[in-house]
Image (cartoon, rainbow, N blue to C red; front, side, top):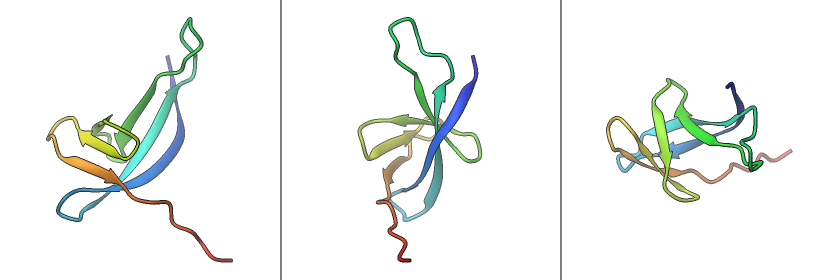
Length: 74
């Protein structure tokens, strides 16, 4: 089953480092119609979603907080 990139955002750890997080969904919904969403860093490390704005790197346990969306002025 293939995963499709559906979004990306930045998250910051407690030391201020910024990570680029990619959001993927399975291209084929499960039998009940839901799609599985997974998260990975741009370099491929897996990320667990804890709540809407909190994530954790699987390998290291580092906690990440989603950065607010930037508003670009025209």
